[in-house]
Length: 420
Image (cartoon, rainbow, N blue to C red):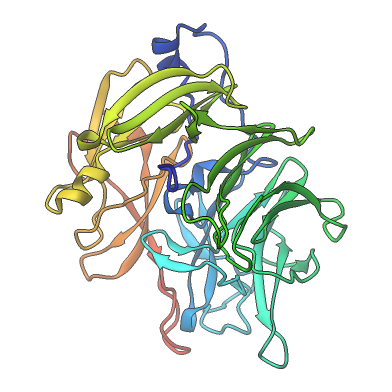
């Protein structure tokens, strides 16, 4: 059952697909413009978790923990590999919520502190600006007003670009000129050049539980398609409600994604192809298809006792045994790195979180992994690992640079936490 699919991939899996489908190895290069497209390399659809990070031309923006449960934007410079709060004020100690530019009122609609930090508090780079789902109580402290906020890359110039939503927003993203967001029954969109205009319905559920926030298990975009996984049940239906669709962003034509008549979720994208999968009691089945789900061909099958996840970053494929490790309770999480011809290049272990596994391993971009883990003092930290070391790790923990502590301050007097 694809209620929870594994991590959506940013991958150039062309040759891998060609080995089994017989297609031309010279066609179909991966295509995504991080300045205009949803950055799916930071989305993990298993559990609908999103890594709270986005990429710009100079570095990365990460949502971390601030004072008293607040959220703070951390900027990670790609060249210097330094992390600092996104604050433009000189000599700011980043320990005053009202004065420091780096703090944001990100929405707590679906936020949970996990191994990926402030999940649900997603941030997106789009055409030279940053966008977040924000919220605050009004003067009565009763109404929780949710909206999309735009700000400059240095954290200044903050602007509310949408009206207040009159419903919780659990899924949202920006893709090729539109802001998409989900209610309990609809996937809507508005143009980015007029975000306060009347929204257009992209997809509407046939049945749903009113005011239920998770009718959309997931919603994301790749090239000219939006993909949504929905639970289309109401009080009269107890099972069989899963629907997975590809929707063309220009025509809004809808295509059901299925394998053998059962819903199948996207696992990987490469050029104008994707890998989809579904599962039953016997195993998990993978097929290669066009982006609308058509021309689907069998890819490979996994038995239940050998399930792993597979991801990619455009250069390498990563096979993650986390499902086996989690079930057994005593195994280590091992990432196997393969090239495009399925030759094993390396294996490595991730920085451990007090013996917890990274249950949703994200490949991220072609240059770096950015993880959360604990240091020797049991402090929650963010680390960066350069992918150039792949090929020489030989099963050890991947070498990483400590960027900063995830929680930047404990009170208003002890200053900032970061590593020089």
